[in-house]
Amino acid sequence: MAFRDYGRFDGISLAKLVAAGDVSAAELLDEAITRAERANPALNAIVYQDYERARATAAAALPQGAFTGVPFLLKDITLQCAGTPTRQGARFWPATPADHDSYLMARFRNAGLVAFGKTNVPEFGLVPTTEGKLYGAAHNPWDLSLSPGGSSGGSAAAVTAGIVPLAHANDGGGSIRIPASCCGLVGLKPTRGRVSAGPDMPDNVDGLAIELVVSRSVRDTAAALDAAAGNEPGDPYSAPPAPASFRSAAEAAPRPLRIAFTSHRLDGTIVAPDCVAAVEHAAHLCQSLGHAVEEAAPQIPLELYDQAFTDLWCSHLASMIDFLARITGQTPGPDKLEGLTLAYYARGKSVSAARYIQSKIILGRISRGVARFHQRYDLWLTPTLGEPPWKLGRFDPDRTDLAAAMAEFGAYVPFAPLQNVTGQPAINLPLFWTAAGIPIGVQFVGAFGDELTLLQLATQLERAAPWAERYNGIAL
Image 1 (cartoon, rainbow, N blue to C red):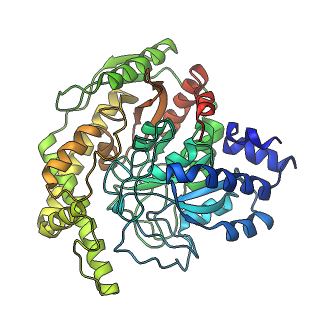
Image 2 (image 1 turned 90 degrees about the vertical axis):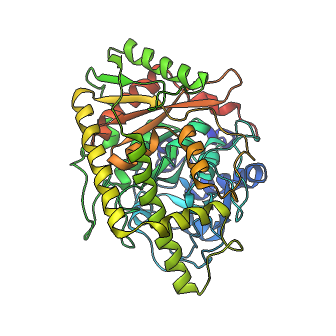
């Protein structure tokens, strides 16, 4: 194998080369590390190096899975990897190595992935950009002055730059789909309950958040879902049954679908022209493939929705910070927490148990209304973001006006948090680029439990309008 071609291969292709004996896992890892050392000074995508343990793993007998021998990176939020710290991007979180693997980490290992580092995130993953005081800003490979999105921005930047073909990510308000849009990647948020949050938590942020990857190909995403999906003893709920293999089933063409689309925010305001153009391009492409497309959107009581979602998120953050304060003896304050985090924390501390339960009921009612919308439409097509990727520096981590920050974030990410509330699967696809060569993603939302239709349509769209060659133009 010519290593200069490493970046042209997705994870499945690299694993096939390893299986055929054309290259070893150790050689792939060395190439990934070489690329990381070359690109990371410009990107600041990787914030923790675990090279020597990874080299020992790659040199040993690896489990036989879909990604045997493929280099991999882990996001510095939630997932526990024995022997490495997970700090949530926060100075408040001690740099203590985990003494165990999360169930998901064990599944990644069983798939044959070789993890060699952790990727950059904002503090506690709270914002749609990757700019924080602990690690500094991550940069978008398409334009280093731009954000790669958040909170999985470091993972997305590393994949886009060709350091790894796929990387771990998670999503509690769009944190897989936002950076996938900013960086031109495939980013699937699975159905609630599809991936276990154990053994440390029954679920993640009361079911709002879930884990998977960002990748450059639909089949890598489908294979990663095969690897990650499944329940473990003690999980509080499960997703509807999955096919025997998402990757295999996704190769089949989807049936003719009923697709609703919207190109404006749910409050009626207009998104940026490039985001409108991206949705219109995707809608026309779907029509050309035989799907029925019409303009429609679910009706959402936005004021109730915004307040209830914020209540849940802020309450969980406050609980986490208070737990850390108790076990570490630290006091939450501006010396250890960013100003916006403290504003989220204060909001969370103000939420009573009764109001928390009321907010859950509100979000449950909204979820039922959206479910009725999907009885008419198989999929819903939206912009992933309300505008192109932000310039770095636009976000101030020490701003304390929470209402103003949330309004700005809501305008930038007008659709993605809704699927965290409803638990539905949703996928970002890189089908459109601006005249300046910056990716603008579109989001397809599926009915609860129906990742398969999303993946089948995504495969069909990838074949009709392939995006893989675009990554070859990035030179770092």
